[in-house]
Each structure stands twice: as C-alpha cells, then as structure tokens.
Length: 445
Image 1 (cartoon, helix red, strand yellow):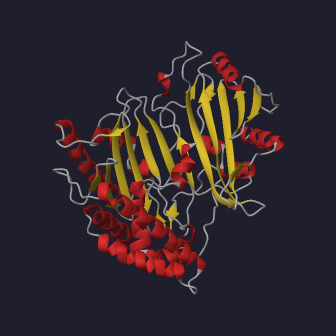
Image 2: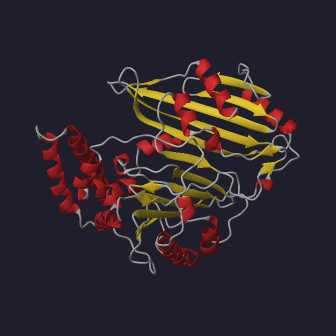
Image 3: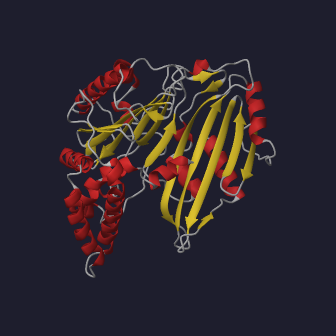
C-alpha cells in the first residue's frame, strides 16, 4: 500500500511547508511534543457532533471543498467520480499534536483525461502559526531565506551537540537539520518564486508539483489540479486560455474556502464513503467501510493502536453506472485503511503497517459468486459465521482474508513490518486464528 509510504516519506512540497515547524516555530513545537501522542479513536461510528483539534473546530477537507463547491467552481463532477479522504474521526487535544496533521480530499473523475482535484490541509494551533509557515514557504521559494536557513542550521547543530539539552528536543532538532539539508540540496532547481498572471498574491504557486498554497484560518491549504497524472502547468511557459481560466477558478475556490472556514457551519465531521442518494446495488446495502474496520477492530486485529489519521475511498457518485450484465465488469466498491506507525513490539523494535478493508458490491449474487471464485482461487477455505463462503491467504508481504455475504464481497489486507536495530526489516504475521477470528468479528457487527 502506498498510504504508509506517503505518511513516512514526505514529498518536497510538504518538506517546504514543514520548515515553519522546525525553524520558525521550533520552540513552540518542542513544548507541544514533550507529551507523547495518544492514539485513541472512535469505534468507527463518529459519535461527536463537533470534532476539535486543540479545542478549535476541525475542518475536514472534503467538507470544506464539497462536491457542490467543486461543481460551482470547476464544473460538474461526472457520475464516475470517486472521493478519497484522509480524515480525523475524533477530537484530539494539544498533547496529541506531536506532528502536523495533513488531512486531504481527492476527487478522481475517472474520465478520459484522468482528471484529479485534490485539497490538503496542514493543521496548526492558530492562524498566526499557519501564516508564519506560509511566509516561510514564500521565503524559501524566492530564495530570500538562504541566509536564515544557514543561521538556523548552526543553531540546530548546537542543540544536537549539547550534552545538556533533553533528548526529545535533540530529536526535533535533528529532523530540522534533515529538512534544511534537503532544501539546500534541491534549492538550485526547485526553490524559485513563480507567478501566474492574475493569481491572488496570497496564493503561492509551485509549478513543479502544480500546487497552489494559501492560508485558510488555522490551516495551510494546498490545492492541485492534474490531468493524465501531470500538473496542468508542468513545463508550461505560456499558459493557454484554458489554463488562464483555471487560475481564475483557483482564486474563486480560495475565496469560497476562506468564507466557509469563517462561517458558523460545522465542517469538522468526516464525509460518507457512500456520497450518493443510492444506498444499495441489487440486494447489497452500501456500507461505511470504516465502521466495519473500526478503530477498535483494527487495534484488536493488528495488536497495535492505529494513528489518528484514517484513509477511506468512496463509491462513485452514481453507483448505478455499474453494468449488471457481465460477471467481468468492475464492481462498485469503497474501502478503509488504518495505519500503524512506529509502534513498539515485544522486542522493542518499531512496527509499521496497515489494515485495509475493501468492500465490493455486485448487482447479483451470481456475479458475486463468480468474482469471489476469482478472488479466492487457490486459497484455503475458512468458516466465518454469517458468510456464505470465506478464505484466507498468507504471503510473504501481506495476509488476505476474503468473504462473500450474498452479493457483497469483503477483502481484508493486512501487513506489518518490524524495523530492527540494524535497520533491517522483517514481516510480522498474525496467527491464522487471530486473522480468522477478528475478520469474523468484523463481519458480524
């Protein structure tokens, strides 16, 4: 799965953004990170009416830039559109913020142009901190921060070398040094200020990654628009009329986003993985996968507490686009992924991994049976109460459990990896009984 890698290895734009944390806001984050993050979570069904971060109202990106706004600003979404959401499903306190939360929302149009619209927020404790981080990014882009980075590098090296500084402060300082090093290494090719005619001056533009960045309340927000897997402005010297129109749309999007953040509307709750009026396909009721693979279920399954950020993918906006006359047609589905990062096993080694539950909905039981046979071919069968058939597969890198209930298929993927003292990695496998018992428990909820 790519989600864990994305969380562990930040891309360059996130490195740029993160400089505000380790450089301009170093002292503030040292105070916050003296307390370790707790990994509490909900049971998959959000019970809070308002989700907060350090006592301020959370802003979920898929609520902030909802389908209605996308249609108003960027044009009508096709019925094939699927939404991937990285979200918080419970409130977190100040001590929980040991790293920046970066919730996101991606609209994949699944059209001939492979259009993708993505919005991602970086959560800060206050509007002032978010603005400071944006200012740092602007300074880095323009090259004006080179001298400041060198001075900060010297200060951070002094912290790392000090025999009296607390170990946690040294760890943060070392991370700051790593970020500065990456910035300096790539400065000659990527760190330059680029402007687009007509773009609001409060919005930064990164042409390499096609990112528009602005401050929205206590969040720093990145907006990207891609077609055929490429940023629309990549390699462009003279924008086309259509690209110039996109600049106008981006300005309008940020205007609306700022207005919504400042409104009294509750935008804190995660969106549904069934973003449509249709709640069934054939005899299958469309389900919320993060309720089936709940926080508690994932913790019992993996033996470690998931992190606070959860990933889900939705069904298409219009599930009726699924063809019902072919067993080989792609089935409509949605999914939930819960991540494990840097947990300690019995030997003191760090464990990383994930559990992913994909649910597929067939228009008929006959099609579901055919697809189940394809999914489970060669796998040892398993008895799971309440299912028509089930199986488990164990491979070198992941374990898979498959089940069918009528015209609904459940596919559970699990992977755990332990990092040894010598930086070597070994796969941690769940016992057959643990996997089968927890899978059955999930499906009986």
